[in-house]
Amino acid sequence: MSGIIAYGTYIPKYRIKLSEIAAIWQKDAAEIAGGLGIVEKSVPAYDEDAVTMAIEAAKRALRMAEIEPTNIGSLYIGSESHPYAVNPSSSIVGEYLEIGNNYFAADLEFACKGATAAISMTAGLLDSSQISYGLVIGSDTAQGKPHDTLEYTAASAACAYILGKNPSENIANMLAMSSFTSDTPSFWRRDGSKYPSHAGRFTGEPAYFTHVMAEAKKLFDISGLQPEEFEYCVFHMPNGKFPRTVAKRLGFTQEQLAPSLTVDTIGNPYTASALLGLAAVLDIAKPQEKIFFVSYGSGDGSDGFIFETTEHIVKKQQQSMSVFKQLEHKAYISYGQYLKQMHVI
Image (cartoon, rainbow, N blue to C red; front, side):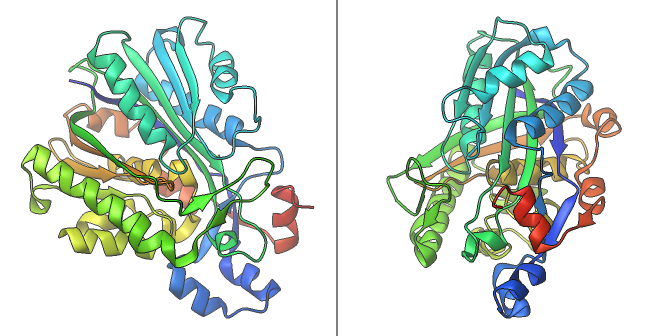
């Protein structure tokens, strides 16, 4: 059975408070924070990009996996902020990690679900015995145009997962996976445009909620499981309100959702968002606990997975650079410094 054998995360230490951004534009900070359910967000250092963060997360995943890099048979990176329009991030990361040359590689884009699409692809390679291990990374230095709503939420982080199918190594088995897709233009960035555009409130009901709900119900049908049979649930987090709303609609409790809610304190790091929530859950999960996981990407689609932890997770948790510790390790910056680090000025 395919599953997760290791994971690694990287959250830049820099933060900017939403109140700092709101003050520049003479907006009501309390109203904005209350509306979005976010108080601050993570910001990359001046010399960090999606590739450098991907490398940091992948190194941590490899240390946890305790395998040789050359055993990696595939490397897929999902991102909305690849440093090059033409020149793959995956090959740069593979070269740095010394994976060698004998691996499948690709950069994937499907808004915020590029990396979860990569999980599905990697599971296919594993189940068909084409590879023994696959590395999946979601990494973004998310862009938001100054004075746009996205400026308050677009954040930065990276998550790496190594997948395998050896029962003696899996820390979480993949019990089910599915996907739901439609052509719903809720969020886009045209070629040559520096910042993405979005359809405002349209990104809610016909986009996020329609796709996450539909995919979640497919997972329930496929697995025959109900919300009360899961210890945790994880959803993509474009803001603090959407995952809470969709969890409630599906019948999950606040206790099942709360451990995954990284969005409140670092915002939405796009392809790393849902994966970071999953990592936060894996940091604390006990053996034989089920995790309900649904991602989301504008354009629009959702990937869904059901994981069940194994007894091997206890040892691996001791090797993790926990999400919680990284959330607490932070340094605040001004709006001016934020613009410099985001290469706006």
